[in-house]
Amino acid sequence: MDRGYIYVNKKSFINNLQYLSQVSKKTICLVVKANAYGHGIKWSVRNAREVGVEWFAVASIDEGVQVKQEFKDSRVLLLAEPSVGQLDNILKNDLDLTVYSDSFINALIDTGNQYKVHLKIDTGMHRIGCSPDKFDYLFEKINDSNLSLAGICTHFPLADTDKGDTQNSIDLFKNTISNVDIDNLLCHVDNSASTFYNLDESFNMVRIGIAAYGIEISPIKSENKLLPTMEIKTRISNLQHRKKGEAVSYGKAKILDRDSVIATSPIGYGDGYPWNTFPDGKVIVKNQFCKLIGRVTMDQILFDVTGLDVKVDDEVTILGHSDDGKLNISVSDVAEWNNTIEWEILTNMSKRLERVEVE
Ligand SMILES: Cc1ncc(COP(=O)(O)O)c(C=O)c1O
Image (cartoon, rainbow, N blue to C red; front, top):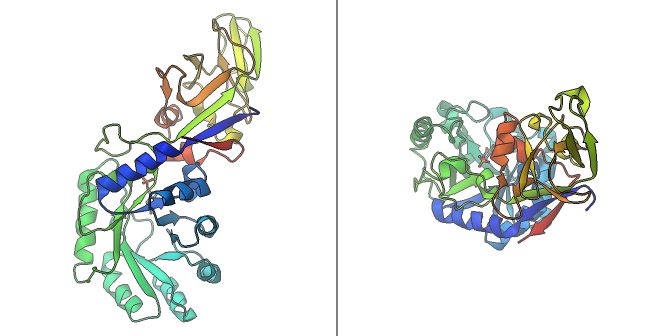
């Protein structure tokens, strides 16, 4: 081992996709933006295809191209309107577009090409999407044009915390499209959280990200059916004895309150392990939690191994279970130590640590 590995677990990922398909009873559109939440786009697409997933959602054309390179016949949905200057690229790579603005739709029509589009309605997120009162106008415009309407969609701002607010968005969405024959259209509104409670059969596709990667995010619990798909292991790269009253790492942020044995591991914020993990964060060595003892640096962390029988090259668990299975560090733990959300922890994992598939 050089610096460390990100182990991506195929069996857990497939378990999650099959479970989500069974719970939702809808077509799964797997969200693979941001390097598939840090897991690797090609890895995620390859394994998802094995269990019949055909739809993938991305945030950039480059991500869409990566999906198509893996499986040309996948359907790929770009989640926001790109710049008009990119339209040739969209056509060449056969990407589906999310659309919502009059000017962008006009630009698509002006090309004379048959772009596949999903019309997005803003039902409360207030980020992108057409206002409900513009829906009929845009719907008619698309239907009367060379464009091919593949779906209608929306996105929720509070799916993981507020079912009531989400229901208001669902009601607004249904009301807005009530005059439309949706038989041959994809209707997709759910993300991971709402997939567990919005079992409305008038929708036929769900856009799932974080739950596929094993993170419990819904107010409705999955009863441990979702399995974490990522573990991160590194090694002890240095050991030093330091005296009470000394401090280690930048800023000398913590004065040692006893003579200590300090271990170093070659992982840092340059790998996506967040700077704010100190002072609350821990790692696992020899089936014991060890507290970070100084600030996270770009390439290395330091933690307290006083009293443990350790040597250079011993394994260090950054994310995942101890060898004996009794201790665990979850993505939610790391997010909590950093006062952030699970999505940010996963998507920031950089490409410097090699991804290794395990089953
Ligand atoms: C439009 C859209 N749909 C679906 C998702 C997937 O959300 P989640 O990871 O919570 O399942 C995202 C994630 O950011 C999104 O932006």
